Image (tube, rainbow, N blue to C red):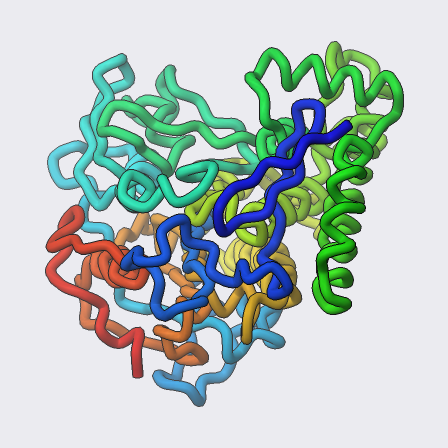
Length: 460
């Protein structure tokens, strides 16, 4: 029989190695999700928590198709941003932001490694392909060290591109720089989890890694869903909820089961492919190649559940590592992305880059749609989030680290005025954006990286 775990201000379902955090329910008076009601993170009594996510895309962008020509709220969507048409009032384009630490200076080649490693650290990295790597604490981990205790997981690091921590990946720079954007310490990157099955298990497991593997094997052997182990708690909780919250619980459990089925379907396909020694949850097509759309959307769904259940408030997601030369045949592009980024002003190559940029943006739009569809208090998950999307390079051919392609989505709990193209003065450090987001998370930090102040334009 399942055992109820009573945790103040948060409802859990527990049973046989499973720990399912649930959304807040008005019927139970759990609209405030903070462990400490007096915490400075609460904007007001009963306020929902604020979240941050950082989503990285590689190799810069074809900037003419990214940057609006108008500044302010009456800007026309450039072609790359067209997938976000339904979210005009939920995001802003932030032009003029720079990562000066990513520039070559005396270190020569290696812009892709520097682009990734400086994107969230705003700190000069040591050029080495040995064990003496040195970057900086990334903005997500800076925040996690201060507010991570409020949730089950201080942060989550996810991606569609498995991280590496050794080897020479870019002109004398360690692969640790190229494949990781989250850094717990200057010498400790946090590689992203790319397997949706393992990310799912981590999110809903109450056990050690060894026990988790054993319990998953048991569920698979008996063809059981993770929901089968918490049914007693579900029935008990449902009897205490009002109709609105009962519907909310049903929608949440349905979304969990749908995600579980899609992960299982991905494993079923892989089991039918020759050469795979162990099945994973990374979706592949009949030819054995990774299905990027299915993969990224599974990870976005996991991110949504993590926010919805307040399992974490800080997530990084690497869509692809900088320097990635993956092709995208699903949209008719068989050239490598990195090769195309060195376009030398070739019109056809630039057109293909813009097409890849738009394809990535379509996946991001899916994530925003998921966040906006989930009600929370008087708003939605998107209303209470801050989502940074972008790259550590602008034009890939020039390896430009200034005027980066950056979007900020979500309303930060009502503290951000969205729906604008905001152009900051040239050479404005991207770290100023990070400080402004930290303020909205209730942190007090005078500086971060190479910051020179706050990005005051976020509030009109």
